[in-house]
Length: 201
Image 1: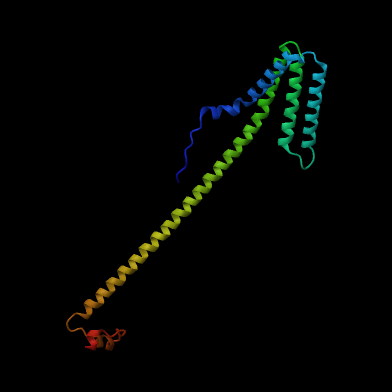
Image 2: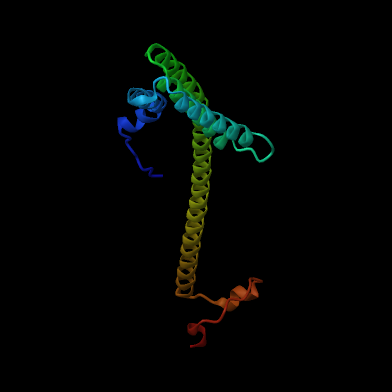
């Protein structure tokens, strides 16, 4: 079977692996910009970010409990809670040491969570590929069997046609022999041959 070959660009291959670091770096940069524009030691801004972080964490807890819990929504809510807390601390503090430490911890945690999803996606992709390969091989085997059956039927039909042609030639040749008497064959106990136009003449 012909399969479409798709060559992925190297950026498309690297982008998923770089996404966690880009996300945490973006949060750090925005928090430091916010810090430079008045968030440093601002209690009101710290309380706001803390409240938003707690609300996102509570939403993650509610989304993860019960039979109708959704892992995707819960994971998104917990990630938002962590990002808001990180933003609040990085925006409130006056130095870079604590924000950088939090950035490292957040990046490591993000890669830890992403690695489990990448493994799960890889297992799913490998299982799908194996299943597709098995189905393709089964279909190819069925196609080969059907082709062999069709070829055998064609050869059988050709052999039957050739036999009928040879039998007709043999009957015509025998009837054309001098001294051929179909009645003598019938008297000898052989099955009676059908009457031909030559006998009627």
